[in-house]
Image 1 (tube, rainbow, N blue to C red):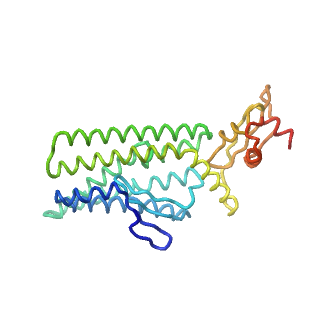
Image 2: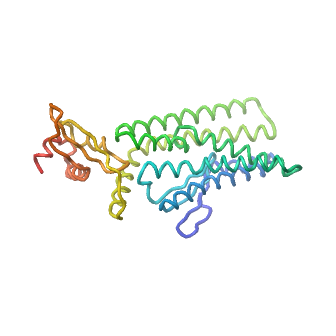
Image 3: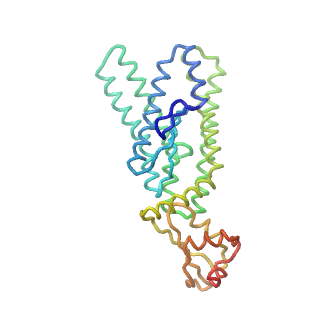
Amino acid sequence: MTLAVFGRLEIRCSVFVLLLFPLAIVFDRLDTLLIAASSLLVHELSHSFMAHRLGFSVASIELQPFGCVARLRRSPDSPSDAAAVAAAGPLFSLMLSLSSAGAAFFFGGAENSALSELAFFNLTLGLVNLLPVLPLDGGRLALAAVSSAANGKKRRRSALALSIGGILIGIFIAAVGAFLLAEKPEGMALFRAASILITGAFIVLSAACERKAVAMNEARARLAAESSLRSGRGLRVYPVAMHKKSTVREALMAVSGGGYGMVFAVDDEMRSIAMIDEGALMKAAARGGSGERLEELVNSE
């Protein structure tokens, strides 16, 4: 749901978050929900600030149960940029938790309770988001680390594994919430149990969407790389050696995303017979030659 639009930036709120507000009002925990919502927003603004510093425009920010989502108009061009954007949120949340805990230690009275709650929520937010599963920030950090050292096929497999891990983590969190609700809690305990259940459901659905979006993300990465080259920025070259009887499709899978791919076609004696760049592979695929062998592509050039 769209809440506001500032220029080209759209502020959105997930339906899952909206479901929490009636519960918070009923159980007189609106202050707790506002602390959580503001912490989530600050968490995402830190992602957006880092993306802006690296030259990426933010299209929208959506408030979701366990973290906001900043949608960039252009994907990061390199694993290091992707890692920097992903790390900014958890890092700031942990820093906010530490500063809130320090302030709570020095202040007493009503402020102490609010600051302690702010510190605890941001500590949980930062640590949970560092779990190495998608769609959490830790999963994006893990994927960036894999992308800097692996070929396209391994990156794809890693993304699928991280998204499946997210589904499993989400199911576990939702199950904990359901178990707590089965105990028929009251008051704040009921509000927390419902929040845990909704958070788990959100992670499951988001991880499932990440799993479906693997192929689309590769296409976006290629478009981002092309845009980067056209704008005068450089890309890291990813070389890979493949047998001359490998197909164009297999070669594209090996070099997809993360930079500019170069394929060395080798013969049975492991000697290089040609060097084929990613542009030539894309051109061959566009004309319907995805099943063409590398040796055939070399001979047709």
